[in-house]
View (cartoon, helix red, strand yellow):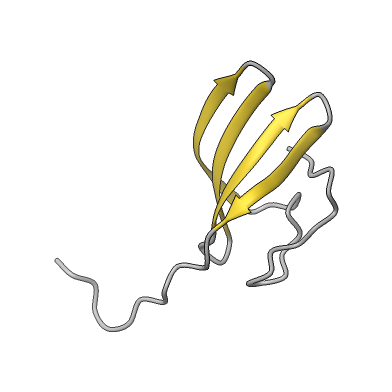
Length: 72
């Protein structure tokens, strides 16, 4: 997936079109599609995919860092 905006994540500075990002879900729309992804820093992103390419249209803050032992 290639970003057409040339932007970066405001939380970690990672380019929107670069890997790694984790695809959470994909949805077909009349204009193309919507892809929910998670940036390397944990920020949840909504990407629109259409005839112009892919671009992040909305994003959350990064995931809070986990501290201490993992819950069992």
